Length: 130
Image (cartoon, rainbow, N blue to C red; front, side, top):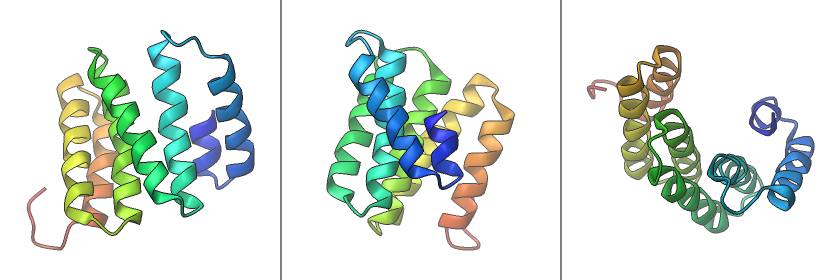
């Protein structure tokens, strides 16, 4: 829900859900730990706290990489992609978004893969194969 609120620009509400998740999620509940960090990173990026956003995003990806949950891993990769884009580091953003695309495609999640493909199209110069 926090991610949907963020996508709608309702960042204050999203932050409330992130704070609640952070406070109540068990440390060994990787799904919850990945989810709140992913949204927290995006929220930090929107406020300009890009260094902290990148650190939180990379921690979410680190946690997700320890699982075999391709969708969660791919979703976590979207956070550093967004943060790196805000940090004006398009090549690094492209690399992590391509990882997300590959994970979604490997899982057969066509809809999510199309969404990442659209992000890459916006990020990558025209004429570069995606």
